[in-house]
Amino acid sequence: EKNYLIEQSINHKKIMNSSSFIRPVSKLSSIRNFDGLVLSSFVVDFGDIILGESKSIEYELTSLTPYPICFEVLSQSLDGSGFSISPTSFVDIPPNEHLKIKIDFDTSKRTFENLGNCSYKIPIVTKEDLGYIVTIKVSLSMPTLLFSRTNFEFEPTISGQTRIQTLQ
Image (tube, rainbow, N blue to C red; front, side, top):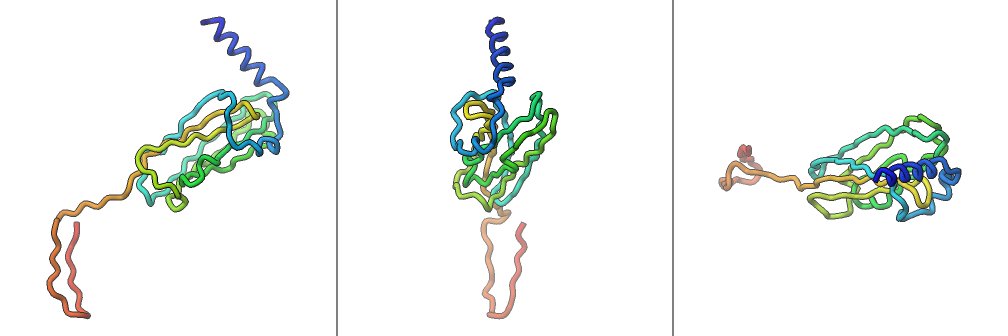
């Protein structure tokens, strides 16, 4: 098992130091589905959101590579979900550079009718066959009303008059 871990570490270093790891983003933009090697997986949990709410989460990433790197966030899997990520394309990020990525949820942009626990996988691709997976998790629910009375009776009202009852 120890030899396997050492071999895995050596292979990872070879991949990271490979000159083919640096790839222009223009070539990556043709990738629509990612089925390559996943280097790491991450989870972004938005928690509970009631439809009608909006929420944003911002993350800071740091480039740990010893050379400039390019990568792209393939956000097509978010279409219709109400989620969006910006920016999605990064070119020639220098070593130790800090980047900000913002993930937004906006109910008005939803076309899916799903409720409850939902998750969306978003690949971050550094090369056609190398990348990371970010899973966005959220629990969506409908707004609910709870009435303290089960019956409201409005007396006959003449047109032009107003009757008011208090609702808690």
